[in-house]
Image 1 (cartoon, chains in turn red, green):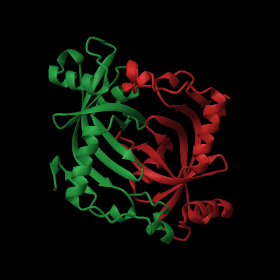
Image 2 (tube, one colour; image 1 turned 135 degrees about the horizontal axis):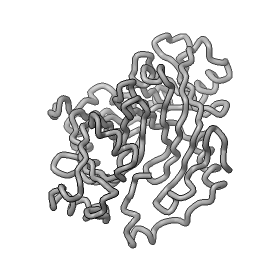
Image 3 (cartoon, chains in turn yellow, brown; image 1 turned 60 degrees about the horizontal axis):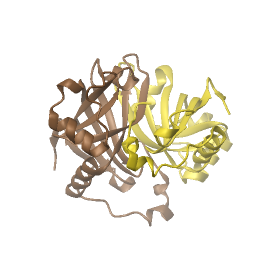
Image 4 (cartoon, chains in turn green, cyan; image 1 turned 135 degrees about the vertical axis):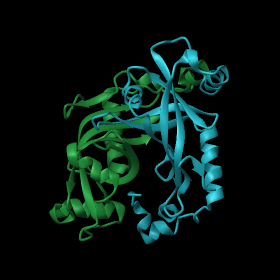
Length: 163
Length: 163
């Protein structure tokens, strides 16, 4: 990974926690998926213009369920290929998820999913046709904090947890 | 903007701070540019694959100076168009920057810029040819915290501060 923060210095290194093992990283990542309210969501237009916005989400059935306006770049961008990268946490405690996004109309959303979204985020947009849900199915997950966790950061590959 | 967090609820609204004015947002944004160590950096491949990584930066001459490995997707992606979106802060205190990135070889970097990068991040990669600097010149900046700051979030447009 390309970040190389101040932790390369000796002074910063002394503050570094020991690297977590893979089981702990998976547990921490699932904890973030259950408990965090927001994610950074990156998409790209077909001609290579990046988009990055914060979106609230609920972890539902092994996917991230998000919502956005139908006309927003995030919704428009996922239509051709569904390719999306989502990060949770902050820059020194990263969960990085590559996934495939599909648009789901509120009318097509399973009731339990819409209810889970509404219960967690206090926000229900079923019946509001200018909004759509996006369901992101992860196929790759990495988790790391500081430089000493760059090794071993891959937790899911090709849709399978490695741990 | 597409995020619609839990702040739409009455209970969360009561915790919301008053919306900042434009001058305060600009001042806060410049403060983050001066003081934050890391940014989220989103790029896209020419065929529309999004990339998003955390990168350390220094605010140098009105640009964000970053560094990454030459072979990393971030460096590869900026070559055709230079289009990049950078966010600072967290999902409830966002500075969102659209910019144009150019690759700068360590040998071509002004000494003051390389020195500023090294001084802030304790990391000097001049003379390490597998790494390149990226200089991001902002042309649009938005800043907002919660839903009540979505209005008035545009602070820079077409490279000019609006405030």
